[in-house]
Amino acid sequence: MKGEQFDFRMDRLLALRERSEEEAGAAVAGARARVETLRDVLREVEGIVKQARLRMLGQTGRDTSPGDRVAMGLLLEQAESRAAEIRTQIAEAEASERSCLEALSARTQERRVLERLREKHRAAWRADAEQRARLAMDAIALRHATTGPQRGIA
Image 1 (cartoon, rainbow, N blue to C red):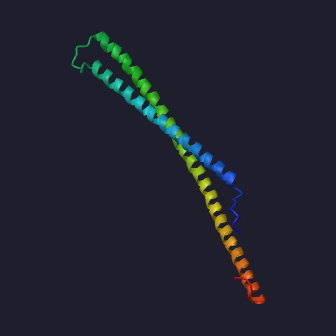
Image 2 (image 1 turned 90 degrees about the vertical axis):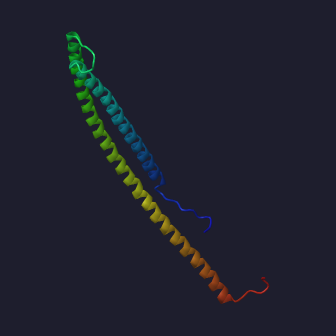
Image 3 (image 1 turned 135 degrees about the vertical axis):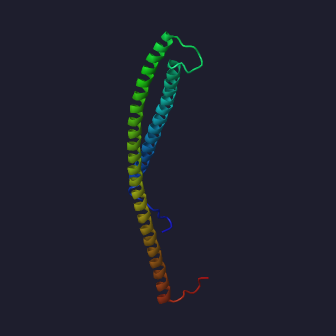
């Protein structure tokens, strides 16, 4: 009985579930990083838009020529277009992040189900091992009681 060890037949499946969960976690981290990178880029582009507007309106404290205003208008148009593209990319990246989070949640749940099953099997195995030990001890006690104490054994 002491040499017996608990063996869960689905340990390999549990290991696969754990690996799958880790991969899903890495995908979430990657998606989150992508969202943050895009947000940083958007902040930079919005800064360019703000500066271009100020220069176009002549509110920077510097004299601006009509040519500078035209150039700032073109820059502003391009920057606003780029900002709109980035906002679309952010929305797509956030949707991807949500999808990754859902996948992670599903994989975590799958792993937890197997872990609970393993613990149930372990508890049943322990109870069975304890029952077998009690039966063995009862058999020894019964044998001792029916044959009487053996002499010569210290």
